[in-house]
Image (cartoon, rainbow, N blue to C red; front, side, top):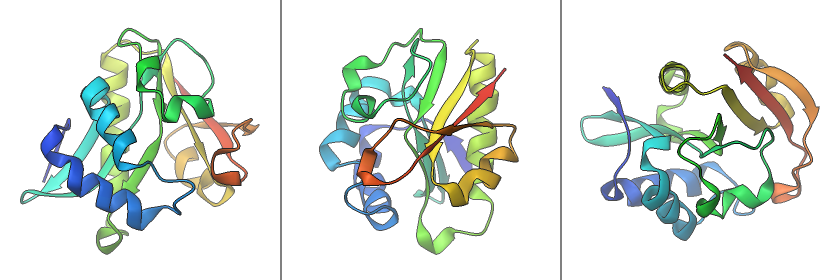
Length: 160
């Protein structure tokens, strides 16, 4: 297994994993994932096993402190020199869940972001995932202003 950044050749696999992992109102569209890859492929961390993507995390860099809904579909908001790494998706192919793959990818993302000089990492999650992110050192900042997918999200922040 390797963890690497993405390329356009990964698009079909990532779209499939996103589609089976999130309700349509919450998951990224093929077009959105494609624009993200074109704009910030180095902000995708992909865990690959024998040529197959089993888990990935993606997001963008910005100087904004909070993750906003408009960031999801506006790749042009990415600032490669931004101090904050936003996370849009932390996802594992359903048939590979429970093996610690998302943990491995998150640990690599945090290491890379620290080495890149980021101030920290921000994500939003549902209440049931708060303990997962807290394990890494993310702090719960409470209910997010996000209305993405018409669900309640909590903003989590990891500061270096």
